[in-house]
Length: 417
Image 1 (cartoon, rainbow, N blue to C red):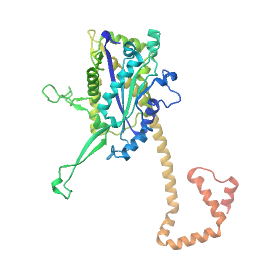
Image 2 (cartoon, rainbow, N blue to C red; image 1 turned 180 degrees about the vertical axis):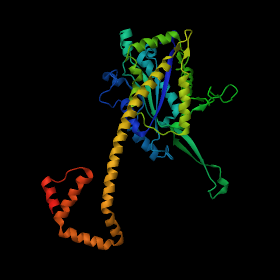
Image 3 (cartoon, one colour; image 1 turned 90 degrees about the vertical axis):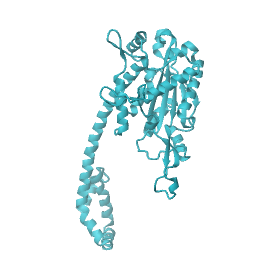
Image 4 (cartoon, helix red, strand yellow; image 1 turned 120 degrees about the vertical axis):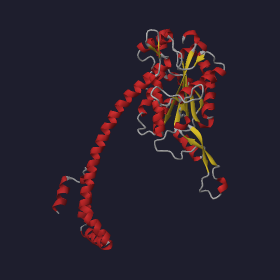
């Protein structure tokens, strides 16, 4: 807990493609037989609390929503992100000091109300409070078990898209009016960066003359903090503000205890298995990435000794980004090797195809010029040499696919004929 009884809240938001949601589902719904995170205590699984349980898998539920017309993927690319996840996190000691497990249930029930307001209850697939992850750092520090309570909310990111009648409409009185409103799945529009403005509503630019954008996650943090304060949780502080030397000392102590903070970071580590899923980004994505990079560059503040101080949330963000970079670098190397191998295989296939084309092009031309005559000749040849034809059909396979369908004696016998 920070000085003065204040505890910082952290909200993380991630979006996933279809292919990347499986690992999150297995973790959140506790479907794995075993877990890489040794802090998950099997005997505590019954303490996990679902505020909303998914009927079927995440993908099955999304498919039902699409079939029923609740949401739309009109205009989507194959690699579009169609799932989102909010993770709500607070200092573990906060719950210990305020009533433990029972207090955490009440607290996250209110958090779930905020999530429904933010996302729309009809678009939330699952909401589960994890209460089975042991905080080993506090176990050593205080000599008793403390569990890290946090909430996972899986949802479909939806925005309302309005379409209008165009000039092609036969009824010209309808042109320009609303044709329909679609509940469009769009992670980028749901969490679009907002252009920053000053107190006079003028655009804000950085020192390089680039437009400054306010990250969507920063605005989300504000809304969450304000909601919880209004609900009576006044001893909370917004996640990424107002570092103190005393609080930094706590971070340094925990950092020296390598592995003690893995309970708080476990969800982000699991996500690295599905990184590198989007290579091409559009211009809006580039602007958002640059804006986020600029904000990261301004992380922390100098103290009197000209050292940069970080809040716990800032430290978590930077170490997570560093970890992501290392995982991505390794995965890029692996993918480059796979691409090189596939290029070699493609050259082999092209060579085989070219060879086959050269051998058969005259037959193809003859078949186009006199198809009936050619098929008559082929049928006669096959009927007169049925056994040999069957053996030759099988014998052609090794050349194309590098497999063996005939014993050597049979192969030699065919060649001799």
